[in-house]
Every structure is written in C-alpha cells, then in structure tokens.
Image 1 (tube, rainbow, N blue to C red):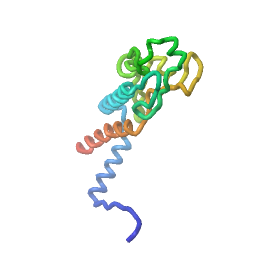
Image 2 (cartoon, helix red, strand yellow):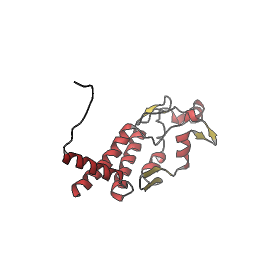
Image 3 (cartoon, rainbow, N blue to C red):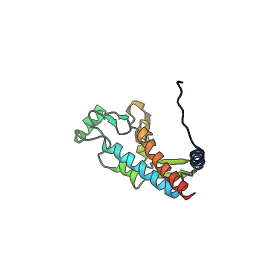
Image 4 (cartoon, one colour):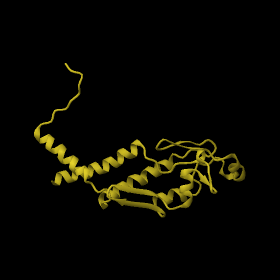
Length: 167
C-alpha cells in the first residue's frame, strides 16, 4: 500500500475535464449573462455587510469577516442622536450608492469592478477622514472573502456547465 492519493479517469472523463478547463480558461466574465449574475452576487454581498452592521458604540465584525470600529467618542458627543444606532446605517445613502444610484459596475474580459461613486465611500473604506489617513478607523465596504469567491465561482461554473451542454 502506498501513501499516495490519486484519481482514475477513463478516456471520456478525461476529455470532459479537458474540455471544461478549456472553456473555463477562455470565459469572458464581461459577457452580459455572466456580468449580470456577478453584479447580483456583489450587490447581495454588500447588502449583507450593511445588514450585519454593529452598533455605533461597540463596533464589531461584519459579514465578510472585516472589523468596523465604533464611532469616535468625539463624534458621539457631537451627535448624541447617533447613540444606539448602527454603523453606516444612519441615512441609507451609503448602502444605496453600492446597490442602486451611484453604483459602479464595469466588466472586462477577466475583470469586474464593483463599488460606489459616492466620495465618502472611498474615505470610509480606506480610513481617510477630512483629508487625514486614519487606517485604524477604516470600515472596509467591499471585501473579497471565501463566500463571495464561492458565489462568483458558482455563477461562472453555471455558465461553463451551460456551454458544455451546448457543445
């Protein structure tokens, strides 16, 4: 008995795997039918992140595994109405900028660009406030995490399956 792991493929299985790899390697994710579904995945991902927003006093980890720090004490003192609220949920403008008006979505052959055109989105994402970089205050808004990668892979995989059935 050997300590190896192997897989045995017959000739037809090998042809199918080879064909699938050739299709996968030449996929244009900018194609409207793929891009549309990737956009839906990205929008759902951002919505989930905002839906999991922690309280303004405590901060916490949001969907996708990134940490959003609490509001600064000075901010809460200047805006006492914010006490008891949730981070980045005050008006809904920021979330809407990713999921509706203001959304940035561009695709290329093997590229997807997703984001917001709202200037404050970039500042919050990278921790830039009033022209000052404060990275420890950053609240990442668009993040790549395992579930997002799996969801996008499912979209592309469904397209590959469809193409292979046509072949």
